[in-house]
Image (tube, rainbow, N blue to C red; front, side, top):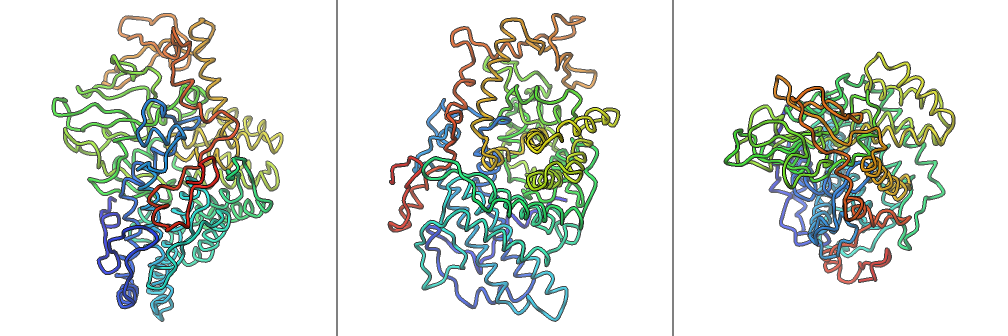
Length: 605
């Protein structure tokens, strides 16, 4: 199913031009009372909150571009002074336009969520004598609370303490609010979702299934934000801290992930690749792995344009799929961290691109190509059910996954381990994820023996969860948020840089066992295939194979290592990662002196 009306919806009765997030145009009482007096119009009102997923603030920034750099996804920020490069290099200015649009549209989404929440709470339809009407209104209320919680979660990750606005805009409100403690905000939005989730509908009860917020997603978001609230965070003095009540939030994460497991369990689909291929084919199954995905309409969304397998198109191309690039490369250290029998590796990590002749070829082909620029393999425009046109780029319509059931299982395993150690329940949740990752013939060693080994203690099981989440969610751009809450961001970046240097040294010195060169060709179906993805090979068995430098490409004769190895994570490996960015100028200027960029080394401007 591919819906078009949520992201494209506008509600003329309640949406108005907004000069800034703190002082939106006032709304008439009649408008909101009318809109939320019945289910159909209230649905349109809540739809307005979804519209901000269709803006660049989300579709190319928050969803993927701004979520690097990590140990499994990266981009070079030092090579350019542009807005996105400043963010990748952790040196963004308050004038950064990408930060501007995220701040602005986050607060516009929050504004519209507040309008919906207030309108629904005041509506007689919420507690209508008609059970269907009352249930629908309670569900819409839960949607609004959950969407508001999402945007506050993102604001906190990027800006720390921020203004906490919970009222719909109206004449007489104080529009110039100071920053609120991030822990106060998270505690409140978590409680809002807890209060609302019981009245919500499951995905298989909603008109649009997993293409709209549903009870599964809200339960999962309670767990996710509880782990954010219970995790580590950067303070203005550039130290990492964790609140003394953090175990209470691990308990919430455990309780609500378990609640979903108990009330609406489902088997993980056995075909890992199909989970993402469904998105490329516009298929959105309920009661499956993905709990909620942003429903990009055809002509909207940047999946397959700035993230995914590269497709070289244009007017001279011999295909009609258009052009798509990959902004977030996968480091070889991540590729080689996988067990060679783990089916997730070759789904997540693409060693090929599609050229203008519509042929699959090694990523290192071409004068400007980087042989180790591994792509996110879960999505590509050449997977679309029909070609969108030679000159197309943006707007593939491929949905973006927001939360999967595998995530819920691993959050349950993590929170249970934090509270009680690697119990049989924690092991069981991890087992379900690993069983999907390996052919059954390997379960005795790759699943059972592995879990027995990592369950020796709480720390070893936690480290296993850290690794499992990397392997399970590569390319889905949630790793940054996990490394922040775990407090191991700099550690993982240092490990990545040192790992890449070792791969380069081993390849250059001839001491490694991994592929210095890859031997590749196209099979009888024209598909890219590699002879030696896991091992060093001196020569191919015949001349049908093309030899291309792979790990040798990490070495530089002048600098010793490719410059990106030393510089991509340079500002991430100094012990504490300053992942917080300055409040953009628009927020400072519109606050009438209330907000300022104090702390975090910003100088107070």
